[in-house]
Image (cartoon, rainbow, N blue to C red; front, side):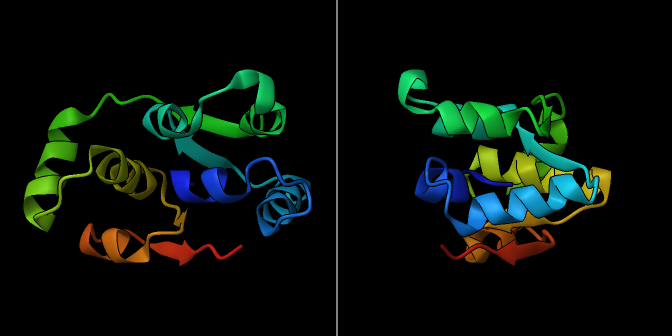
Length: 117
C-alpha cells in the first residue's frame, strides 16, 4: 500500500481503507507496505493511534534493494524513490499496490488498484 490511502483515510475508522484492511485480515491475506511509505505518513504518533494499529497487520519491507529501485526510476523516467521501491517490492512478492496515484504506478510498470475514499 502506498502513502496516499494512509494520508487520506488513515485515522478515519469508517473509511474504505479500514474496510479494505479488515476484509484482507479476515481472509488471512498478507498485506505489505515499506519503511519509506511509513516515513512519508508518520508525523504525530499521539494523533495516529489507528495508523499504529493498522501497521501491525502489515509486513513492512525495508529499503534494501536500492540498485533495483534506481534502475526502475531510470527505466520509468520518474524520480519518486518511495513509489519505485514499493513497485519493486510488490513485484518481488507477487502482489499489487493500493494507490491513490495510479499515473505514477503505471509509469513504474506496477500492478495496482486505485484507492478512492
